[in-house]
Image 1: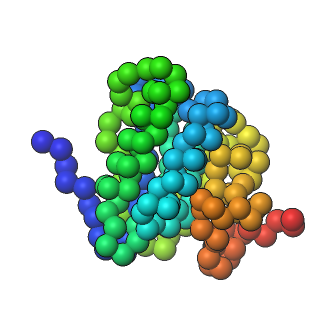
Image 2: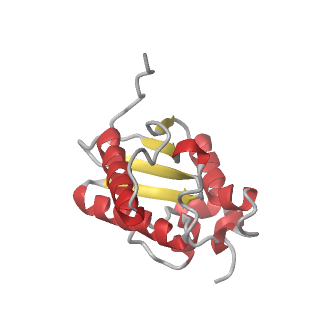
Length: 171
């Protein structure tokens, strides 16, 4: 029996989803763009704030806050399901794209929130994909630095104070 998902009205969540069999299905820029297109569509269909994200080659990270009366599960199931169908259609495949249901952790403190931002921003650096997180074009820090707020929300003022290594660099 699977564990019940912890959900709270107004909560922020660190969500992860892994590609099936550990494959690098998200490796190509075309597939990453397909995923981002799916998230843009979801933002028109559902009310949620995407505070941070990164698309790795074999998994994703979101820092997400569902809107009032929205379901995290419904939002994520729609994004992952619509992307899986588009991915399979694009590559003429059948079957599972995602390994399992998505994982989510409720952000319960300011310290945990800041640690989650830092973790998501630095994920491509840790994986050796880039030297600086703002260079990674499939992560929210790149979108924030380029003032592209069609996917990610504009950063709150507290981020510059709490994460100066990301927000006090000269433009």
